[in-house]
Amino acid sequence: MNEEEHILNAADINVRLWQRFKAGDSDALGQLAQVHYRALYNYATRFSSDSDFIRDAIQELYLDLWERRNYLSETSFVKSYLLKALRHKLIKESARLKRFHEPGQGIFDPESSDRSIEADIIEEEHARFRNTRLKRVISLLSKRQQEIIYLRFYQNLDNEDIASVMGLGRQSVSNLLYRTLKEIKEIWVPAEFVWLLFVMLL
Image 1: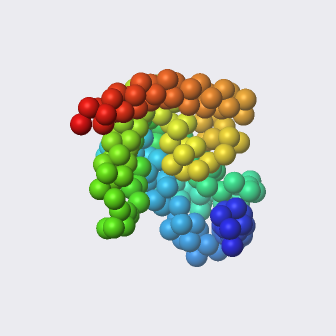
Image 2: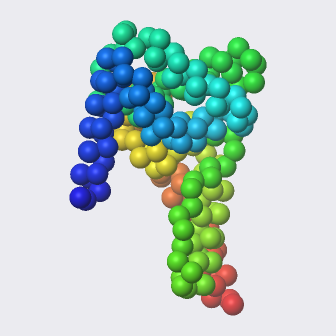
């Protein structure tokens, strides 16, 4: 099974779980909660650094969904639906508690993949430098730009899903993503040039 087939299969499973949950299957809701918990938690950290607050918000989100299951619409984009619902809940609850923080206040901390112990030391140093530089570059972006980068590259959402989560038009998402990537490139290239000079002078 290639990557595209795997993604499609996961989407089909999500849709079936969503349909079962709406029909009153609490186990299906539990499976959805388990599958998407990490993605929801990581996304919520863009809004708050309070782990207890985040966990409570996610739990309340699923309780709300269960209570309103008969009124929820069908969706083919379960993950983006949950992200959008959590976004609204976090904003609402944070405003009520007066501790809301805009998305992306901190530097992104994407999960790092395990590297082979046989990896070349020089390659590893280059990778470490690039990851550190990328985090710094992203931290210079606007909060809106940081959010779209997180959703696109760390949550693997397409433009349509991002539009739904952020409450933007699809064209607005495309434009914002284009401008953001262009800005990253403009900041990144000089940094890579400085790194090249540094290596040449060693």
